[in-house]
Length: 536
Image 1 (cartoon, rainbow, N blue to C red):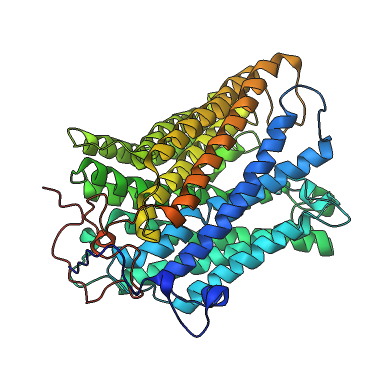
Image 2: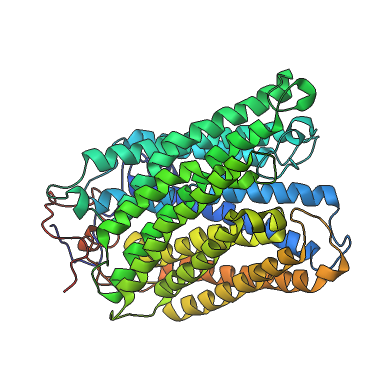
């Protein structure tokens, strides 16, 4: 196994000199590390835009009645917020940034299998994101259908729905090509001696995710093309007035979009499974069980889409089957939580910012998972479907899950990526404010949902005022915490203390090379002889 303990490598990817220099050098680079950073910069910008739109919505919902924006503007903000966060932040998020940067290093490779295709995937992502931004402008106004583009309203709306749907279609190509690249890289480029069950768990999570990206994304791509064709040529796929079936759209959309939840959460689980053994200095409990549970989640995740449609109209047998499968898919997730806690048991735990975000992920993911079971149960789903209870559950999984795992990952790998240490004290302050704001923002929504508050509404009755007021205050606290966190990371990337090669005493391959990594990752060919979590 190669090792280079110098703090700064003179030929790091940050100092890469190719045919072009400066910004053009970055835009034409096929280095997987630079492409990961390009994704990071774009996702950070889009995330802050999405957070700003969410903040405006919470400001409007601070009190009942129209305050600052009208209903149509609210619907546009609601749709734009969803499109940005789902298609441009959450789905690419962990895989595009940390998968690109660390997958080759963690398996002992010099790059991904198809470097030019990797850069092309980023350009497709950029083009799709640009189209999504364009959809917010124009004579017809921002799309107002919500990020799900439900038919038949998405067929009949005179807003810029076609442009937004086209953006999601283009972004899907980036996801497919990235997934294909990762699958080939893992199959063909692992270091000598790295058998399948000596591979770190973050690459395993990316492998399971990549199969979902490759197999499920084309379904939503075809579905979105059908929406465009129906809007443009009036072909009757989904609109009943044209002979179509709106329930067909829901089936096709959720056949992709529920597996897409695991595109979001599986890499998050992989990140957490890397961090916990490092900061507990213990071997992962149940390594093979975690691997198999990742593959099980990816497999069973294809079969549970119908629980989004219990109130849409389906046979009693279908309802029971989808309800049963929803409970089944919770089992491999529960295995992971058990193994994380078992790994922490009697470990030499070091509490820092990274580990605090990781613990927050586990706590919030458990809340999201348990409330998901109540939604998977027919008796309770009928009552809370399309209420704020679903909004709370969704955000506990997506933001409390993928979001906090992303925050944990950027703090965990920050020294390796930028060669600098972040400010630990400011990091903990940011975590405390972010966690408090998140809880204040989303937990009251469970109560609002149980009280009957419907989701997607611009206004509400006075009896829901207290819950909305607390939730809105939580939103502003959360935004303040995110500002502190982002400020700390940006400042530390420029002025932070120089990072050693292995500041956390990690065992996986990225901690055996310099910080930041050299151009081709390793000075010599890597030979793996040990388990990736072989803590004594």
